[in-house]
Length: 137
Image (cartoon, rainbow, N blue to C red; front, side, top):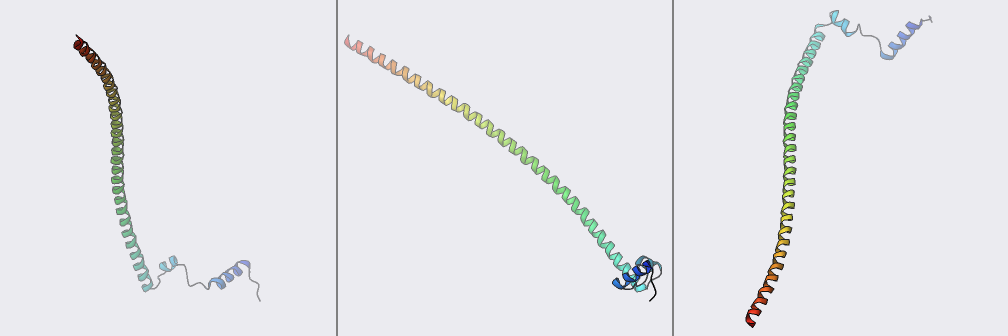
């Protein structure tokens, strides 16, 4: 058995593993004039893939535009919601302040009513005393 150099041995091991080569690489086959049917079907496949790529690219661009439009609407709605929330919170604060002021006024009026009741009671007692004095005379 003849001795193979290391490169030949590697090449023979490779071909025994993957099988023999079926000609030059694809790039060289297309340059070397491969069969017309193979070239035509490859061209059709390439053309189909290019068309599909163009279609997907247009779909992607349309989706990007739709995404941008929806994000604009989302941002606008978010701002409106934030503004409405802030206005509602301010309204609640104003109402709470008004309620506190009203409560203070109510407490003040209740105290004044008690004062007037005491004064009225005192005046009533004086009137009764005066009426009794007048009755005695």
